Image (cartoon, rainbow, N blue to C red; front, side, top):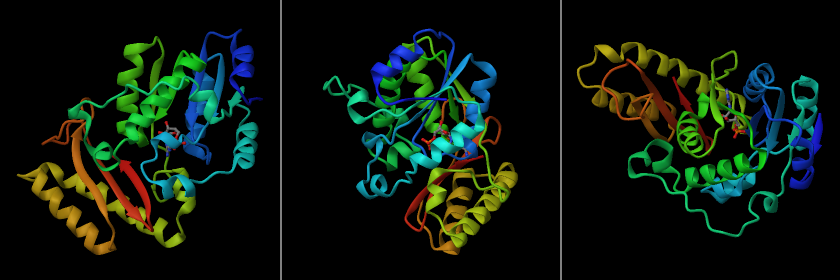
Length: 271
Ligand code: AMP
């Protein structure tokens, strides 16, 4: 596993390969990331993982400051997996070297879910993914369905601009069905237990949703109940079509999306 600390070293090392699988991450490596890496390892000649906490996608300074970082441990896990050929650890200037302001804007119809509650977040994500794709030039990028809206927006942008394919990967969960996330490292046992209960509740809601006459009223009521039960803040609880992310009135081809806070940590999930 070769560690690439700057773009010069990256360009030199990657030149011989034209079937690269790329797994972009912000570190805090867990089994969710490893499942993306495994898929890349199976489908591509070489696998490159990047670790870069992109300051431009954080709409909240405290969130950026407290985001879990443990590069030593991350490298240990990646090495042990034996599935990673290159780890790219860029500095800010490796990514943002052109000084030009990004022109990436979201369409009005895409300003939903997390885009509505985290102003500027996806503009930052799309900008960094655009830059990383230009630098790494991979055949395939592997991304998790856990961040469904991110996957949807990145796929739409990159597949229009580049030959690169964006490959969706299933959400990996812990034994209580909580979606794995680097942010879970910031949660205590009690919060993790609440997250498990919320997952259970969402599974039930999804099971019962088709019997309801008015799905948005039903979800509004469920949102209020969860909020009051656990005394938590919920940004959204919505059923949306998984192809175009439009609000949906049927469970067919749809997913239930939630974003909520536990102990000031913002968690998202969809099922
Ligand atoms: P992050 O480091 O959180 O930016 O995530 C890097 C990549 O891993 C993104 O494509 C995420 O969607 C994906 N990912 C994060 N958590 C999971 C999970 N529990 N299951 C599958 N993929 C995940």
